[in-house]
Amino acid sequence: MIPNRKIIHVDMDAFYASVEQMDNPALRGKPIAVGGSENRGVVAAASYEARKFGVHSAISGVMAKKNCPDLIFVPPRFDRYKQISSKIQKIFYEYTDLVEPLSLDEAYLDVTINKKGNPSATLLAREIRQRIFDEVGLTASAGISVNKFVAKIASDYNKPNGQKTVNPEEVVSFLEELAIRKFHGVGKVTTEKMYQLGIFTGLELKNKSLDFLEKHFGKSGNFYYNVVRGIHNSEVKSNRITKSVAAEHTFDVNLSSEIFMMEKLENIANSLEKRLKKHNVAGKTITLKIKYSDFSQQTRSKTLPYFISDKTLLLEIVSELLYQERMKDSVRLLGISVSNLNTEQKKFVVVQLKFDF
Image (cartoon, rainbow, N blue to C red; front, side, top):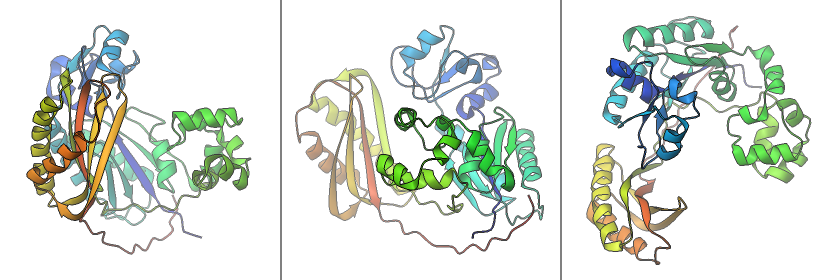
């Protein structure tokens, strides 16, 4: 049996929106959406003031404005978000080298053995959150538990600017009482399927046999069977490897001509080349992403026998993919991604000891 780990999941509160409100005092206390507009695009993040009206990430700008007529749209500044994220991660690394960033605004920290010599993960989480507030000016929430799955769920419990610890002896009862829609990794479609099978809580999930879950959910059945029993042995991977690099653009006016699309794809390929070279990677699989005016999406891919990162070669493949078949409608978004990268994963052996929570 694997000894109990001490995992902290730190999640910044409405990160992009909070950065905008911090940098521009005139936006504080107001409903704002980062990205999108009242005419086009998709919201990337929303302030808590906007969330009260049902505005959230991935909602269309049109719907967001309908839900919240006073909504203020702010263009995203990803360079600024990366700058702030870098400051936050520096704080994390003062506590442990086992940091696994999931995105700019959240990360797992394994503090089983930590640089502060503090046996309490709960106190460490509180200290980390306080330091983020003092040194960066933003609030963060945290979940603390024996594995990544439970820590991730716990970080949502007392948002914003709060934390929750689920001690080892509390894990199973915590999961039994949890609404199934709150299980990390259970999306809308799976939630509906579980409802149809009479599974509304963790306890009802736990009462189902492994055979039953595998019959209805395939390979995921084994995952559900284990996590609801508090079994999730995934380690905090401090060496997360980028699996793909992408660039895309949503257009103000829908495109109906492949010639115009190629012009736009040239700009996208240029941005993608810069990203690939910045990270010193190349890939074999090129994917063209097409989102039509009715929001339906299509991808077309080609895998090469060699690695590429040059925009000229990228465009050659993308052009081939674009003209592979006729467009079914006008296009609102185009994107290019490169995967099957030439990155090699280094393996670390981590010895973890058991301490009192």
